[in-house]
Each structure stands twice: as C-alpha cells, then as structure tokens.
Amino acid sequence: MDPVKQKLKEVGSKRAEQLKRLVAEHGNDVIQEVTLEQVISGMKGIVALLTDTSSLDPEEGIRFRDYSIPELRQHLPKLKDDGEPLPEGLFYLMLLGEIPDRATVDFISRDWARRAADIPGHAFDVINALPKSAHPMIQFNTAILAMSTQSHFRKAYMEGMDKKDYWDPMYEGVNDLISRLPVIAAYIYRRVFHNEKYIDMDPSLDWAGNLAHMMGYDSEEIKRLMRLYMVLHADHEGGNVSAHTTHLVGTALSNPYYSFAAGMNGLAGPLHGMANQEVMVWLEQLIAEIGDNPTKEQIREYAENTLKQGRVIPGYGHAVLRKTDPRFTEQLNFANKYIPEAPLIKLVRNIYEVVPDVLRSTGKVKNPWPNVDAISGSLLTSYGITEHPIYTVLFGVSRSLGVLSSLIWDRIYGQPLERPSSKSLEWYMKKVGFK
Ligand code: NMX
Ligand code: MLT
Image (cartoon, rainbow, N blue to C red; front, top):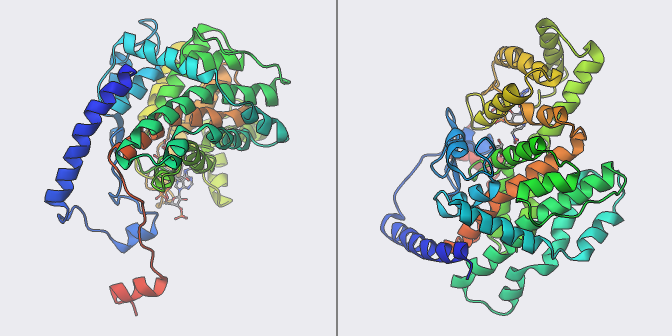
C-alpha cells in the first residue's frame, strides 16, 4: 500500500473512533445560539461544519492545520532553500496533520505524475466540443465531470462496498483527480490562448512546476510563482462556497468528480473565485479611463464611482476576515521582493492605501481590507501570464488540494447526508413574535 494511504488508515481509524465517542458522550451539548440575522445573512458565523484541513480566524487569517502561511513557508519541503514550498507537502499536511519529509513529498509528486498520464480521451473531446469562447471555467468544469467515468468510488459503490471502506476509493479518486487538474487546466489555456499548441507533461517535474511547464512557462521564476499560488489558494476552512459545496454534494455519496465539479461551479461566481478576473477588469477599466499612473485622488474617485453604480469593488471585503488577508500580504511581499517596480504592483499598493477608506465610509462594509484576489491577477500578469480568464481555473486547481482532502476525511468520519431545515418568512415572523 502507498505509505501516505497506510498512514491515513491508521490516523483515520483513531479519529473516526474519537468522533463517534464525542457524539455519544456530548451529542446533546449546546455549542452555539443562532440569531435570525445570521440565518438571513448567509449563515455567517454559524458553526455547522466539521473540517480539519484548515481554520480561519477573522483577525489572523488562515491556518493550515496548525500552521500560518509564514510557518508553512518555513517548514514545508522545497526544491531549493530560497524557493516556495511544494503544494504536495501542503496536501500531506492537510490530509495527515503533520509536516512531511522531502522523500514523502517526492513520493506524492511521482505518484501524481504517474496518475496524470491516464486521463480518458473523452475529457479532451468534451473540451474540444465547446467553443473556444466558452469561459475557461466552463471548459474546466465540463472536463472534471467527464473524467468521472473513471471514478473508483462509483465503481466500488456499485459493487456493494461496505460503508467503512468508502474512504479508500475516495482516496484513490481524489489523488487521480488532483494529479490530472494541471493537465486539464494547461490544455484549456493552450487551446484558448495559444492556438492549440499543446505541451506534454514532464513527469520529472513537481505538480505545480509541471502546470507552469505545460502552460508554456519554463523559467524558475514562474515555477516559483506557481508553487506560491498553488499553496496560497489551497483551502480556507470549510464554509467558503467551493469547500462547502464540494462537501455538501459529497454527503450524497456523489463521487469526487461530481462533488468537486459542483464546488468549482461555485468558485466560478464573481463574489468567490472569479473575483480574481473581476479585479483585472476593474483595473483595466481604471487604466483605460485615467491612465496607468493614476493619483490616489483619481483612484478614490474611480472607486467611489464603482460604488455609486451599485457595484462591488472586487478584491476587497470578506465574509469572515476582518483584517488584510494574509494571502494578499504574502503575495505583496513576494512582489516587493522580486518585482517591486512592476507598474501593476505599484498600482495595487496605491489602491491598498485608498480603497479601505472608501469602503469604510459606506458604513456597511464589514471588512474594508483586501482579500487574496486583490493582487493575484496583477502578480500573474506582471510575470507574463496575461490571460485573465485562466486565473479562476488556476484558483480551482489549487483549491482541489484542500476540499478534496476534506472529502476523504468526510468519508473517514462517515459524515451523513447534509440536510438542514428551511422555513418560510411567515415561520420566522411567528417565531420572533413579529407584528
Ligand atoms: N465593494 C462594495 N460593497 C461591498 C464590498 C465591496 N468590496 N464588500 C461588501 N460590500 C457590501 C455588500 O455588498 C453588502 O451590501 P448590501 O448590504 O447593500 O447588500 C454590505 O457591504 C455588507 O456586506 P459584508 O457583510 O461586508 O460582506 P459579505 O460577507 O456579504 O460578502 C464578499 C463578502 C467577499 C462577497 C464581499 O465583500 C464582496 O462582494 N467583495 C467583492 C468581491 C470579492 O472580492 N470576492 C472575493 C472573496 C474572496 N474569494 O476569493 O472568494
Ligand atoms: C476563499 O478562499 O474561499 C475565499 O476567501 C472566500 C471565503 O473564505 O469565504
């Protein structure tokens, strides 16, 4: 058995037992009261999910298992001392709760390269059947669904697998799926933006390095950027739209391809992952209207006009965070270190000095600070990956690491069908005595 799976089996059976005992002994304990406003405002702050891979603090931001982003960059294995951590190591950490050694990370890289070689031809056929003008997320999600014909989970379920073994084919399917996403993403990128000049996978490369390579970027700088991007977008606890949707669909025992495709449909919304593309549209419009070196006063006016038109300023605000997103800060630090003079990065820095005040002055925005999307597109563009519609696909490739390791844990824990209750407006009015 592969060593990662072997370890997961040991850790998983202990934790599943722990969960069973917790519910048996404390199942009736009250953990939280819920207000009417919380229900109506998108269930914000309601604790209702079990997710181990990462946790989100409104002030501090994300921790993957127990590690903050700076700690990850310090401890996760890298190819070179001055490089970025390998996302394979983050996958292991999220799955097993500990930092892997370099040999384990290499094992995962090689295992994923092997699995990626076996993508069914019809996954490419369905992409080719779509017009090139179809948004890359349409092409990405369609291919993910098409690959579900190879689902181990579905096959084992049809053969009457015992419930306690669900995690096993889920583990296999998840690893297959994660391994293949860079190939699919790069295929779409080359199809749409590079005249169908496809580049083969290099099985000697790591997962993120290969993605850069298949997209047509072989410099160490871009591979380093891709590793950073893949680590930063990997997970954001369980309540965000893509994670929650993947989990929800998985509770119907849908296979990992169905579940992940559902999550990716959520990621394609402009308030979630598509915000990285929206930011670039917003910046391009600003540059077209004002020029590429706007003053802070001009940025303020442009941002205020966006609000006057009843639109959101993309890349700013968050449903949970109440401070600058550390994923924004990490990317800004990276840009300040390697490309401090890039015009778009200068613009991002100036916007950061102006937009929080503009949002604060509305009196309603709960978090006026930038999120991950406020800079990711500018960073990619500054490195020459200028085709904005691919950005959400890259977010999706990264997000697979977190939501799919959670999906394996959902099956280890034997999480049941998720089915909350809904009530009518009349019910809520009566409940609170509204006249
Ligand atoms: N620009 C303008 N208005 C905003 C913004 C913003 N960036 N952020 C929040 N608001 C508004 C929001 O639309 C709402 O208005 P109304 O009451 O008129 O409906 C009000 O402020 C209160 O919203 P919040 O409670 O602060 O935010 P909520 O939790 O509902 O939404 C976001 C969170 C992230 C959807 C919201 O901040 C937003 O739309 N931001 C811009 C889009 C974006 O950057 N999304 C990416 C998030 C990260 N990701 O990758 O997923
Ligand atoms: C994410 O990375 O999923 C976003 O920041 C959205 C969220 O956490 O709600």
